[in-house]
Every structure is written in C-alpha cells, then in structure tokens.
Image 1 (tube, rainbow, N blue to C red):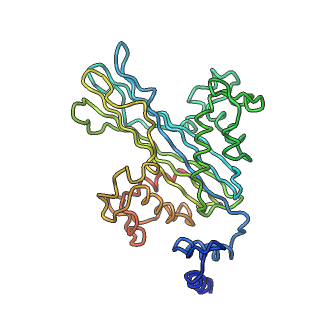
Image 2: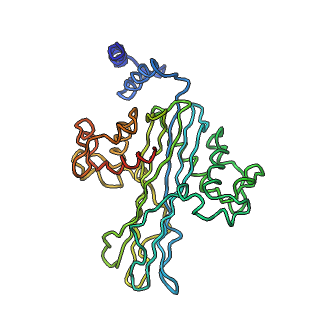
Image 3: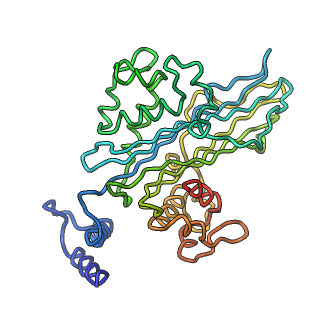
Length: 348
C-alpha cells in the first residue's frame, strides 16, 4: 500500500509545480517528495538530521634529505558531524592521521611501509602528547573536548571561536581542556557542516567515524628514485543499534616522490583534497565501464549499505577482486569494495 501511495504522489508531482515558484517539478523534486512520503510513515520528520564529512591532507611537514634523513609526512584532518534543520551541530567527531616515511640522501627508503598506520584517536595515549601537555591531556582527549564544545553551535559560531596568534583557544572554558591549535579544526568543522546532507540520520542515532590507513611504495614518475603513496579511507556513519542509518565514504590519497639525491620532487605547499572533493578531477569516470567517478561509486555504495546491519554489509557478495557480485550494486559500483567492507567492520 505504501508503494502504491508513493506512485500516486510521484505521478501527481509530474503534473504540478514546486511551491509557489512556478518552477516545473524536476526528477529530484519528485524523488524527494516520494522519499518524504515514505519516511513520514515510519520516522518523525522533526528528528531528521544531515550527515557531513570533511577530510583534507597536508604535506607541508615533509622535507628533503640533508644532514638528516628526508621525511615524507602526510597529515590528514578529518571531521564528521550531524546537523539539524537549522544548521546547528548535534554531534561531532574529530580525528587525524599522521603518516611518516624516511628516506636517505641516496634516495633509498628507510621505513617499513607494511606497518599499520593508526589514526590519532586509535593511538590514544601512544601518541604521547599527554606527558608534555600543560593540562596533561592526550591529543584524542583534546579533540573530543573540542568536538563536544562545538555541539549546539552553527558553522559561523565555530569559526567565531576566539583564538590567539597560534590559533590556540582564547576562551577560558575551552582553553581549560584544549591547548592544541584549533584553527584547522574550525575550518574543517565548518566544511563538514557545509557538506552535510539528509541521508537518513535521525535524532538519537550514534555518530561514528572510522579510518583505514596505509602507506606503500608506488611507481616512481620519470626522474624520480622513489615514490610513497599514503591512502586514508574514511567513513562517517550514523547508527541505530547495529543498523546503519546514514553513511558517507571518502578517501585521501597523497603521493610524494624523491630523487636519487634525496630531494623531494613534489609540491608541498598545496593542500591534498579528498577524492570526493576532487570529483571528476580524480579521473576514474573516463576509464570506468559505467562512466562513474570514484566519488559517485563511493556514494552509491554508501547508499546501498544504509539500512543494513554490519553483518549484512560484511555479507555483501563480491568476486575474487572484491568487486560487487550482486547485480543491483554492480550496476553502480565497479570498484573493489572489500576495503569499504573492512572499513565498516571497524564499527563493531
């Protein structure tokens, strides 16, 4: 009966205009109307939230070899939020990944790239900030304190938090629990809010953020002795019990090359945008058999797992290359999804 009523609403929408604007209804308007009709039967529309994720990388701490070994350092800042209909943050999770690899003045890698790369939240006390912090707080504790502080604020209010010249908190109530620089986090939180979309999250759902990170030696470009690629895969997920109610997947991929004299060949000044932010510039659409970019396929997978339990996500059929074996998913996703499944498995 619900599907029958939805069909009537869709048909009616095709012959009407949107609101009082006189604009003809588009396919997006029709689909939204039908989605609203279905959701209204099982959810409180007043409790719907938007889910947002933002990630950006930086290579600015990397350095060529000289008297000391060279360093490739990729820093990725990650923020997930849920936002209500008025733009107020209802929940926030902050994390970061710092991946390092050393090389010498002969262009030889010195770091074992097979070692796992945990996020700063996963490192916890092993990150080592607590012992040198003026307030005795670890990085993850300070990130959590900032995340808690911005709940109830809008993006503009977050950007308006007072900071000193080093972008450390200048407001006493925040400075008592956060002494790290927060300027980058303020911008990242605002960006996450700006990207937030209504994907199914409801008031009371739990917001989770998970990452899966690695470093590997890539194919060095011409004129380079070596290249290190860092991959940070990210999922922002809301959950009701064991069921996923919304999901956003993104990734940051940073490539840094160096020559046989240990000199870096990569521009370190530019930020490293995520794959979602790169969009068509990532270049997968032109070679994809279904003409879909990475961000489009990641969004399709995220939509597919919404409403599923973690067991159901783990049970999605894949082939030997971990590409979708289920026809309805394979029609919109042709990339390997084993990594996505493993990423969401970390929600347990």
